[in-house]
Image 1 (cartoon, rainbow, N blue to C red):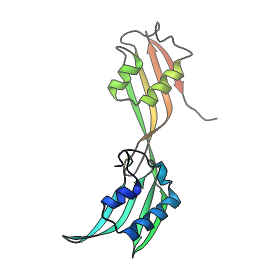
Image 2 (image 1 turned 180 degrees about the vertical axis):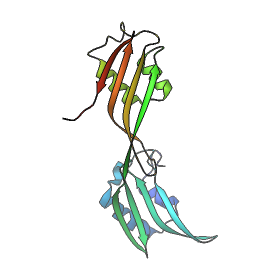
Image 3 (image 1 turned 90 degrees about the vertical axis):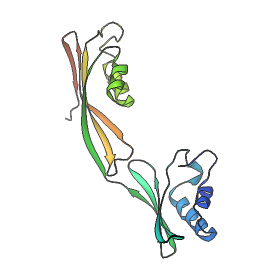
Image 4 (image 1 turned 180 degrees about the horizontal axis):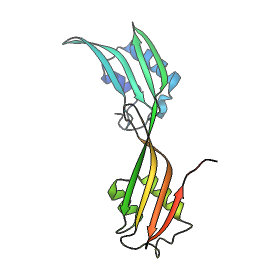
Length: 180
């Protein structure tokens, strides 16, 4: 994991990669990714073939860019090749039913709803509901939304709210997403 002040070169040096290979890896990776923009907290995964207790050979390096793509640096027979790979994306629908005790945001967060979905939900109802006066204890809301992930379930992203229902004093305010 990239720490403050680290560069791709210094990370490679910690992996005991030979100077010639290190420069080839940097040059090839730079074609796919601006290494000056490597973020603190960025994961870089090294894969090795273990030959013996004292000898390992670098097989590949993986740099996850997002849940949709990653950079793979392969080391085949001494030749270094970097390529950007689009990862297959899977969609899943999640639903939550939340009873309001304090606020939509607090109670939704406590139930495990992502902040981005809660913000979208509040924005959705902002023209119809006065959040200070209309919401009472024991009102509730239901929300159904899309979740995207890759096959390693890496870095979840959230799609649209497909359905929501805000139940205020037994009055339902429902929204559906639809296509014409």
